[in-house]
Structures are given as C-alpha cells and as structure tokens.
Amino acid sequence: NAGVTQTPKFRVLKTGQSMTLLCAQDMNHEYMYWYRQDPGMGLRLIHYSVGEGTTAKGEVPDGYNVSRLKKQNFLLGLESAAPSQTSVYFCASKVAGSAGEQFFGPGTRLTVL
Amino acid sequence: GEDVEQSLFLSVREGDSSVINCTYTDSSSTYLYWYKQEPGAGLQLLTYIFSNMDMKQDQRLTVLLNKKDKHLSLRIADTQTGDSAIYFCAVPNYGGSQGNLIFGKGTKLSVKP
Image (cartoon, rainbow over all chains, first blue to last red; front, top):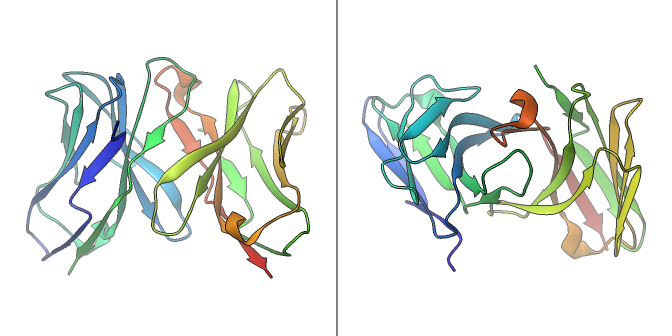
C-alpha cells in the first residue's frame, strides 16, 4: 500500500496563476482533509470531505476549491494564486467516524511569487 | 471554538527525559492525539489517549491527561537524537463527528548529543 500520496512535491507559481494539487489514498478511507502548514501557525484545515461527492469548508477555505469525484482522490484547486498562499500543503485521510488516526501525505511545498 | 496551546521549543540532552505540554479548551474531547513530524515529512500518529484515562504508557512514551485542568502531556524517556522532530497535540473539533482535528502549533524538540 502506498498510503496517502500527493503530487506535485514542489511547485512555484506566479501571482494569478492557477493549479491543482492531487491527493490520492489507497486505504479505502471515507474522510479526506486538506491542511496548510505555516511557520508558527501549526496545521490549519482548509477543506474536508466525508465521502465521495461531498465537501465542506474548514478553518481557512478562502481562495481554495476542492472536489471529491472519486473516493480515493481529493483535489485542491487554487484559481488565482496569491503570495499569501505560499505554504506547505498536507492531505490526510481516515476511516469514517469521530475517532481514529489521520494518515498524512508527504506534503506539497508551494511558493507563489 | 476549540483552542490548543503548546510551547514552541524544547531542548534536551540525549538520555534525559522530555516533557511536552499541551492545553485545550473543549471539554467534550474524546480522544486526544500526539503526532510527530520529522523534517521534510508529513505527520505520523505517535500515540493517543481516551478521555476516560489518566495515563497511557507505550514503551518510552507516557501520556498524562488532566481533564480538570484540560492539560495533556507527552513524556519521552531516554530521549534520543532520533526523537528530534516537531510534536503536535491534536483534539477533535466540531464535536468530532467528522473526525476533524484542531492542532496545536507544534513543539520543536531538539536533542543535543
């Protein structure tokens, strides 16, 4: 099992460009999450999904969109990137329910110039 | 909403014990988690404790929970250089139904030889 994978690993964008980050998991998990990690800020939840075809906003959703067309994939889109979106992005997944471990991907380091 | 606080840095000598502290605000938290992040990697679950427990021990790790004071601690015995990492305390948010977690900002543990 590959667990949770993220592509790309690194990306540099110019302000105003768009891109999509892909998260894939092979553990048949229902729930998936997108976080951003910034120095001194810990991890903040951007969007999450509790099942195929469903998404919901987290703590910092502005400037991002997500889609969960297939159970194993969770896409994070930036329509018009801004320097404030420079961050490390982590995807995670877990089984359904309130308890249980979140499994994290290795992260995508995004720089917006 | 839920707030989780941790000190940002801890430095210890190899062989000493490390104690990382965390305070939280939501008294309805069921499971409380400790995650570890090594440099350049995603987070991995280190250990967890159920809210009806006061203590949990797992090899070199001891988790203490004081529900009255909403205080959680992680003790690492015989700390090794390989324990150098960022440690995150995490508690459920939104009542925990979607498995959402609120993370502390992380404590960077530096182990000196």
